[in-house]
Length: 306
Image (tube, rainbow, N blue to C red):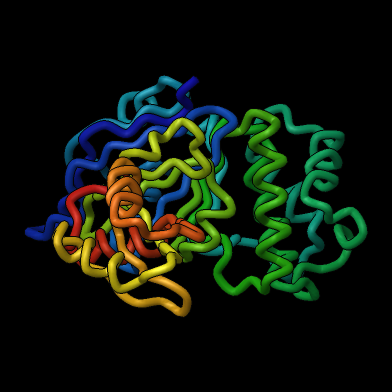
């Protein structure tokens, strides 16, 4: 079920086109990454979802409700942190949560206690926020965003400033929330974290969605995927010469020859080598990483992401 749908979203400030034709979907129980370099338009998009920026053109639906026509109802389904958690440092974590709970109808003490358990802050919840580490403040910020049990959680660069342990704890927490049915949109410029954290990723650059990638999608046809292969054989020179005849660029490796082709081409290459009476000892395959795809796309060397 869709919890967030963005259709043909545009943002123009004075004469500058900030966002162009953004289309994006987040489903319940799904962690969706919003990946792009700094200045690509991630925070602007998120602020428009949260109603902090006006919409120049297009539509945003949260839980089926149009943000522009019924903002108050739409926001009842959303919790989020834009940039940094906004907390009162002279108060305890619990006092902060009590204060923000008063902004929502029907949030009980039991609800607060449950959220504190979820974000693993029970042992420090009665300490003042000024004594918290950045990771602890991030968890209290998440607790604050979750107080009213939103169906959609939006986080803008939540790993900024966190150490590796803090990032792992955040990743585990988001997985737990998604298992509870919360749809999550999380923005970042950290490729490796997006790959480990998300089910699906949209790539944005220069205000435009330029690619989308499923993470660990077992239904992708490997024949249509491009891989780096290494062939280790009894005669690497013959392998190299044959690849040249096929107009495929190849390079010597420590033990064999490496080249880049689609999976569907490999069988024909191996058949030709057998005809040449070349003994094949090993064929090693390396799939392109998200980082390689991301750099390739943002440099404009490819039209689409696989």
